Image 1 (cartoon, rainbow, N blue to C red):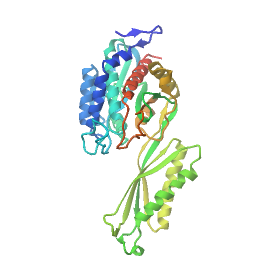
Image 2 (cartoon, rainbow, N blue to C red):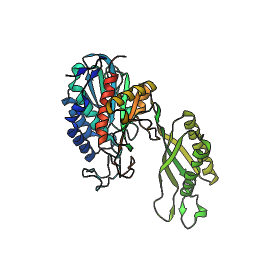
Image 3 (cartoon, one colour):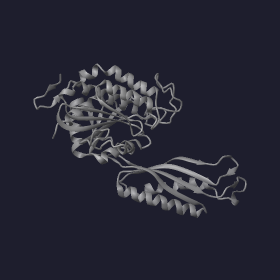
Image 4 (cartoon, rainbow, N blue to C red):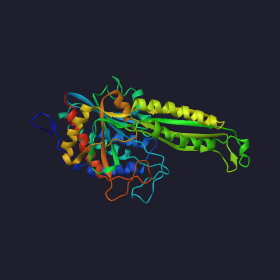
Length: 407
């Protein structure tokens, strides 16, 4: 049975509970790593998650947001509803097979962002808390989300009524929590920051239309490839010269597609990219100026540019009060030396969609491998120190326990 501290809060010996589950958690993480699945195709992962949650005694709903899974743990005493979210999808990357002895077995698909770890951590936390269900106040909503990498999974789950009364989540939570491992931060450390944590992202698409022809007679054509190259360089001046120096913006064009053969000047060039910002005014200005500069510069070269925003996510902003409480929980779980400030970065996260609906706190758990060169997320060389798994479970379990009692 769980014990009660003098202040009446539930006190589970998390270290002891984790010790008996640690090997299985690592095995789970490595199994997910070997069998990665792309966004909205997490069928195998979802089946395993649902089976594990059911065996732990949770109420399980599947097919939420297509391939999402929700597990509800009902405590026996009055309290709050805390949502814990873990994402499950992988990326379309080819992993270096020499990097790990449990490398991806799926051609061209890889867990290069740590979602395999997030899923294993979430299942372990659910199992630990389920063992103490009779002592728990409130309700824990474990949300295993699909399609974080394409920014659509959270919206799909909400569209399926996740937060609605009678829906798969059993109603609206009081608090939303989650974590992301960070391969560039010290292994096992927790980073908790109030306020803006991760950037808003706008997914951009542009089509440059010119006039095709033979490569030997460029004067008879309007070359869209040349115009696209000019635009990629010119648009960076918006960041360096039109964004206030103390603000932040990142404009990246990740793909340019054009042409079919070396001696044909094509009719069109297509660009895809992202804009990342924290401040609404900066975002608005950048989007307006990208469109204006693109259309006007293309016109100067006698071409036409069509610009559109295809998808957007808000920034991840941690509630100040909740961030303070979670920091206290992380300190209790890992000690003062185990908790660091910061973790703010220009990456985006559709956890922000949940947090726009319900205040929350998103935690970073360091996962850098000691002595390794940097292994950034979304890289074929991404790797983590599995010490992050233990720290993730400890911080998550403690934070949930501390936030469940009615306040």
